[in-house]
Length: 331
Image (cartoon, rainbow, N blue to C red):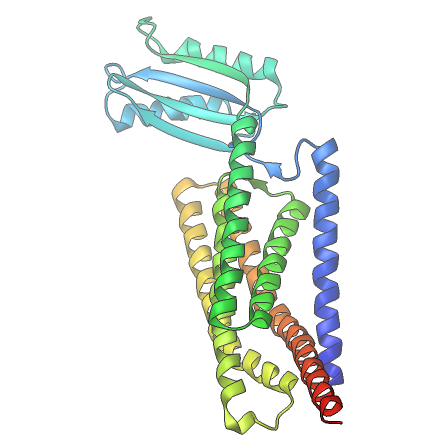
């Protein structure tokens, strides 16, 4: 039991250190580095090069690929973190996105070289333009605030639901596990400074949902074992430990299966786009899965041991007070 208690303390200390470090790094970066997170294209300023072309002069995939190869060659000296293609009724466009601190003069010169080569017929329908200081952070910040409120409401709903389905102690365990897992995920993203965009909102919700599922698996097993007569004389902390061991396989297999799926999708992304920049959302996803894995497998049993002990002590105290009152009344 002493070993288990020490492990609980160690897990708690690790979580506290990571979360405090993440909040500290994020707060410092918020005031001195442009944001709590390293915001990507959805939530930060950027510079873009938009190449517009006419399908009358660039008909077919072969010519469009030649146009793209020409633009790629002229823009090879700049680090493009996002590229997209779009088609319209009479034409299409190629969009290259760069960080806001890119060398504007050099980029403008490269765009002039592109314009000198992509419109041989001088029709004026094929041209490249630099858009500087494009800002999307204002709308993105509102989206993050609304998403935070929605996720918080989901956690509160989970807490209320677990009170009715299980008990207050189980609801407190699930609540703390959800907060810890989400805190670990947010802190790891802040510490690693991986560029994040709208996927952060979806992944945060996924962390909460996955924690809720893991909580159901663990608490169902604990509830079943507490009702099992075979554990009637077993210490409650040991029953929680057994429940954690029995539910660990299911939760671990679930997280590992999701991790394998993410890795496969990452490899497909590299093959399809031939660039490592596509790995960033998958790396953030792995951080989310790692947070869920550690919090669900290690923190949750420790938290339930604590809350179960506190609730049992309070319950026994109430019973003892009631018995004392009855004894005093009889006297």
